[in-house]
Length: 122
Image (cartoon, rainbow, N blue to C red):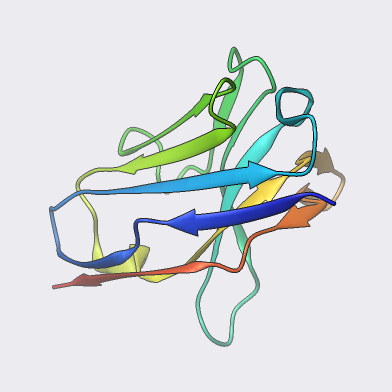
């Protein structure tokens, strides 16, 4: 069974940076496209970024493009999200997702972590 555990969330001032990490176990990590999503109370979970199994392909939500960078280390079974120039609207619970695919309704993941809170103060 695939398990994902996020770390690295916290409180940061606007303009600051945070790095989220996700460690996986129980599967062939390099086979899966991995991604990050986020959710605020009362809203649907939204796509943030995705990286292909090899790391060669990356996709970003328009709202984070140029500020966030997704990366992975297949030797360590980890995927990371470097978040720079954070804004108050980036405040959310961030979820790591495994086996991410694009559907007609947008990006979705098959496996999910428990989430980590990111709070950006104005």
